[in-house]
Image (cartoon, rainbow, N blue to C red; front, side, top):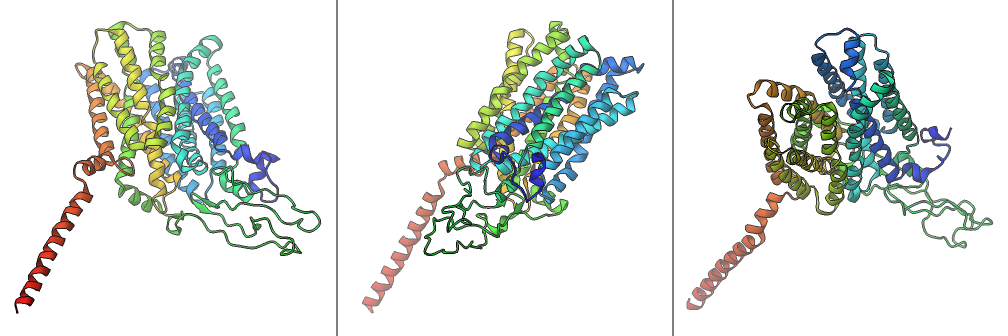
Length: 527
């Protein structure tokens, strides 16, 4: 019963503090991302074998289309999910429904009698993925204080690396030992654990109604009587704002936060006051149309640059999926097990870079971290074109993954900052756009990577050069546009300080004015 209390206003939810806390929400969102990536990747090693068992030919092509079906579900569901979540200020229920859809898709895929059912199951998985990437990140930003958004997003994003790290190896091992259904059962177990965590979520607006603000844990309403004989109805309370990103909650009856004098309040009357939001009324989120959201985002250089980086990140990460195993096989004669170890070396550094980047984003801003990570990722893609040393190749692969993965936390933090300053555009809108850009990148990336690797004379070298060029473009855009105060603006102010120019201009005008006044006085005295 306690799990459904957030939908009722008659009974205080149990575990209010920890179920609405920033760290619990971060844990739930991070585990949701882990589950999403695990379910996505755990079936990749087993799909070809299952398709062969069902007597299909051209298995490689069919497997590619199943991966594309996942991306299609993710992309086409993004806009309605984002608009619905922001319009009705709902976070918890879409997350629960999304996970139920994920569990259903796992069962459907496990028992699929033909290819068409498999494709439908993958589309459903893509829709479920959109829920956690849009609504989950929006919920995290709703709950987290602005000064800590980068750190919490960085921690949650480690789920991406963990899911990929566990998914494929676990899928192959379970399939080999227990058969085709084993990877899906493992995914369903993880999904049920995730469902239990999501059922426990209490959103910030619900917590505020019960006098607790998760983003300001010290400002907790303490209910209790000062004196049972005369002030039994008085409650001590602070007045945390009820402003929530996307909606404004007003409390009609609140108690005097000061300890009252009994002589002043003999009957212990409650005071009715109107709570005012601390935010500018112009920035209060109201439902706006899809066209309005698109226009507002397209007019923001910061938003467009961050979304472009999201697209490039998805493209770069997915372009190497079909080509890296083939390159390792052709140059160093890797088998599937050794390729898995190479992927392991590439993914592990991302477990460190994402939270580390998020930690520093809150201290120095997304402009520095985005620029530095992209700039330091660039040379390693050039080193990856070399064929003389396997240890150097593996180290370069791990280094580029470390720095490229470090871009995710500052980019998502930048999008949250843009949303806060854009009237009418909520977190679900901005992360819906992020999910759309990233989804398109991951959808076209494997196709582009596979085609270039197959048809270019030096396919792997061509892919590395294209990736380097894309990263170089992102470095330039980050330098010019990322952050409230972009690095380009800082450099221009340093070498061409506006204050000194204005001061010099003011001195010239004052000098001219003084000269004019002296001339007038001299003329008058002569007359």
